[in-house]
Image (cartoon, rainbow, N blue to C red; front, side, top):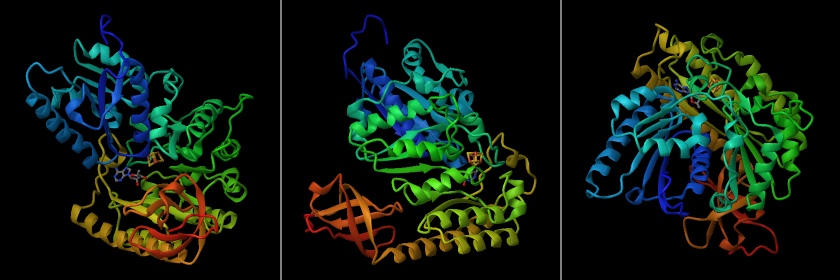
Length: 461
Ligand code: 5AD
Ligand code: SF4
């Protein structure tokens, strides 16, 4: 921002488009926060934007390619804006920026600035540099970006509603051979406990009732506590549960290797910790797990699931799977389907393997043909759908606490989330939004449940 420009609040508008994971959603909010003191307010309308930011995802090729086509559209849009209009700056953030910064500069001359996930706190400074020339910043600085990002502004926080994300950990040291995350997000870093608790208190004060702790490897969390000693995720959950107003805690994404006893015990002991666990396994075949550098076997994964279910029998398990990793045979794939069948997933995400530049998987010479990947994906997804529908069917007739968090699709309806993260549609007064109420599940649709509030004093309609 130039020196002689008045620093009027809300004088400028920023339009942010977010791709990819929940951490990007969180990061986009933090960018909004970082820009607010510099006069930028968020807009949903690119037409009135002074700054357009794409917060990008590099996890699979498709996600990365979308960025270039979107940049073409934005460039055309900017060119069409009447001459004399204020110059709209175009920035690319996130993991594509980190991984392909120079390539973006070369392929997309309309882009004014490119910056990686470790530079968000420097955004105002980068913007002022971009007024006079193109800027690229994809360093991994030593400083703690979280300490430099401003605290979430209340008005932004409120717009997050009753549920919010809170990043507690970033980066990954696991180096699965298919994955770009260790390169784009860097080494594993945990935020100090005091910082996490302060942010959680701020969210609770703003009305948030459910927080989802985020990290690429969230259960490897080991942030330093007040005594300078590392605190595990399980212990952190206990501390967060003490905060008035925080009634539900979730976390994602976890690695099987880091599912320690303390975290499993927290699922047994802490009612605030929701019985839903996203625990990716990727494959059910030991030889593929080895080639993926997953650092665990199929048997170890089953054993972890058994321990979790012993602690919390109703735990809903979710996962991620990759089909068509280099060298995957029909027998390897059959082992994955068999694993899915045995675990009984409440939900799961599955993907065709996508070669990512710079990862060991991309160098492997036994790549699988696209049509084989597509066939396997279809088979796996059919099995996962059967399982999640069976899980939902098993909920019919149960009564469970539902956090009612928004109006429903139809008038006279509200919508909420079950402890198992299923959307629940309920005929009820919108005045109940914000409450956690016991709901009897009376039916299921494709990806959701239908319920009725059963408390005597609730204004069910
Ligand atoms: N190809 C396909 N899927 C991938 N994932 C990560 N990298 C790749 C890749 N190269 C999937 C994994 C991971 C999820 C976030 O994305 O299943 O758990
Ligand atoms: Fe990527 Fe997760 Fe493996 Fe880390 S643990 S390399 S984030 S898939």
